[in-house]
Length: 531
Image: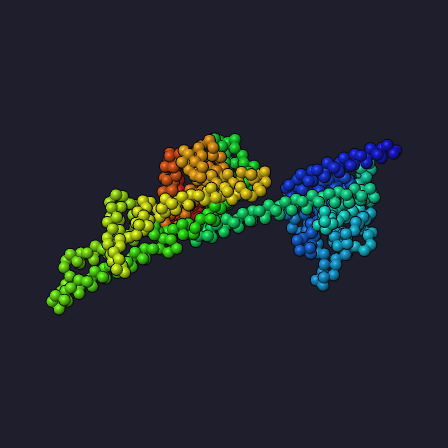
């Protein structure tokens, strides 16, 4: 007999150990909750079980899992949320609800074992009787165990119903042995549940922090608000289409849940390096803009020159004839031409004119004109103004563009300092490579095709498409869908972006789903490019 008892105890220890390992390994909260009830019922041969979780404010016990083998009931967990009203721990006057057995266990921390709930004193089982009358079930024995975490805080209640004598298939009271086993198991389950919730809370905190940092980067410029979110949306839409495709080059590619999270974090953090980029460069809407648009100074300087020129010739006319003679045609032409040149400078400053040789020569001619200021003869345009106005395309000088481009390297530098988990270890590389090109001409490292991951290629495509169609940039006009697709097609031919990804992007109409959510209706000039 002793030998059989020893063997049973050893078997029980082994089983509890395996269950403990399984509980610790399960990361899906819904599955973990189900596992707790399943194993508790198996250990005690209970017909039914309910798992309550203490609400965040500590005022209620929420139903998490409800199971009953006889009634074929499995609610909660992977089966969805239970909509039953929670059990209140106190009433309106803040009196403790000791009449409810589960509330009693949560409030007192005591284990309650009842042979027959119909004959139990001190507790109100009217609800149980109504349930039995409605279903034809007979609730009898009950074991209610508070669940304490590693800090001895009660986080929930485990309630088991109708222990069965497996040999006779009769309802019996829960034995002292079953109670001890359940208490031990409830402690394991509480620690596993707390650990799971802690991990989830940390992951939620990390994701919220990542999005907050991204928001801070976006908010640095009034013209890029929402850029990072939109890039992340496009990125994940492409990745989701890859997971669903069953044909073509991506039929064997399947991003796991962890890989999707890794890519999502990289998308949210891809512009982190811009946090070090000066605002006047990020927001540079005109060629002469720094802290303010210096075109105003040029315009004022021009008006002074025209005024001084006209006053000089007026004075000469008065001295000669003492009459106001009209200015010679050449002088009127001078003023008119100067005003035309000022308009030309204004248009050049906005980037509205694509500069060729003639335009550059005209800029140099205007800039070389002499004017007298405070007794000093100076060129009309300073060297810096002439250099900025001579920008061929866009509003950034080569030096400013290098500063902008450096944000990718800074992104990698900053993210590499963070202790990402093994599952998120590639976030710095994916985020920093969104400006690399397949032909090796991208930045920050000039990687070649075989060195650029699929995730980085996805992020690059998403970033380019968002930039082409963004309607909130002051330095460029938002492209229509057809214009953006045409530009992307050219980038595929130039081996800037991945041809297979672009094909999937088009075939799955990722561009159209995005356009309907984010673009102005006037930009949606075409919806189908299958021809």
